[in-house]
Length: 383
Image (cartoon, rainbow, N blue to C red):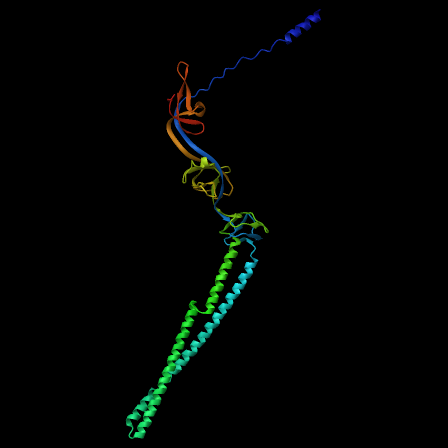
């Protein structure tokens, strides 16, 4: 009987419900309206990057046959980085250069021939000018005046006429030589100035062909535009490329700024020349800078660029930085934490606790925010 009584007692106790703990009353947080300064800022991250970056592309379609420089390698201005197939063009260029050389040799030969002919004509002119019949004519004239008989007079007249004829013939020879000299001098001047002659035409045609072939080869050649580093190169021998497709980038690592990717909404809050404060993840202290580039419609570079006012001497590419731009600020304004302000169905309000413990709603006008505090321009008073 005792055992049964004890068993019954245990069963009765185990069936009783467990008592619940008392309800904890959670009071709504209270905030006090205060006066102070508030700053609205935009904070964004970026990395140091070269200020000058030049895209590389071929000007024509083709197949890559040579890659002479690997990505990440330092290059000097004019270094050849890669080439398309230019074997046929190179052969044509060599042929055009040979044609130019042959035409230049022909012009040289013509110029030397004309120069030699001019020297010969000048020598003949000097010799012709030395031969004069003036003394013979004067003697014949004196003989004619002193002739005492008809036969002597006829003889003197014949001698005078013969001397005059020879003088006229000599003058004609001199005129012909002078004309020849003038023609040769003009031909030489034209050759020197490249104004006439078949050889000059041949030279000009060969030079034109060479320029066209050199331009065609240049369009199929990637060349470093300045001293720097070949940051990327995305082609290999055998690759087919299209004209003006980006295949690489050369950067100037001597000058670095900070590049950051921002949403259009964030970047629209910034302006060129705006001051920013910069903190590097691997450097102590704050640095100053300014916004130097903002993305524009159609611009291939969509990044925001920040130029350091006084960059560290040992600044390296790729350093991580956090930048803070001041968008707006206000002094001696009413402030409340953002958690105290409510929005419902287009209404912005706070709940004010009165002196008697009752509560009322008050519509407010919100100004700038720093992410934690809000500026209230109407609806509340200090305290």
